[in-house]
Image 1: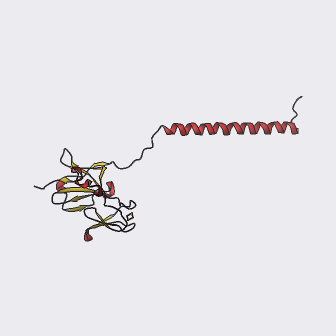
Image 2 (image 1 turned 120 degrees about the vertical axis):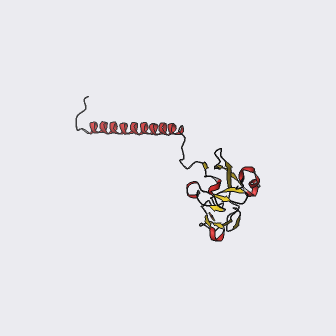
Length: 172
Ligand code: FES
C-alpha cells in the first residue's frame, strides 16, 4: 500500500522519522562530548604565574631593613640584617592575604583580619597561627641574590636555622 501525502499515516511516519533523527543526534552528541573530555584529560592544565626562582639583584643594592621591591612581582620581601639576608614569603599564615610592610611601626600588618608580624616574620597579634614562611635564598654564580619560593622554611619546625634560609653576607 502506498503512502498518501497529507494522510494521518504519513504525518505519523514523518514525526517518527523526526524523533529518530533527533534521538540519533543527541546520542552522537553525547558520544562526541565524552570523547572530547577524554582527549582533554591527556593535556595538563597549565597555570601561568611568575616563576618560583628569580634573581633579586646584587647584595650591594640593598640598604638595611625590609625591601618591598619584589612584593608586587614575586610576593617576597628581602630583609637585610647586619650578618646577611633572608627572604619572607608575603602570604599571611591565617588565610593567605598579602600583608603590608609598615616601616614606621617596624612590622608587617595583614589588612584582612589584622594579624601582625615582626620584621623577623614571627606572628605576635591577630589570628595568624604561625610565623611567615622564609624562602630559599642563596648567591647565584654571578654574585646576585637568588630566591627560590619553591622551598619554604617554617619557623615552628626550626627550619629557619637551615643554611638556605639565611644568606650570610658581610659588606666589605
Ligand atoms: S588573612 Fe591575614 S589575618 Fe586573616
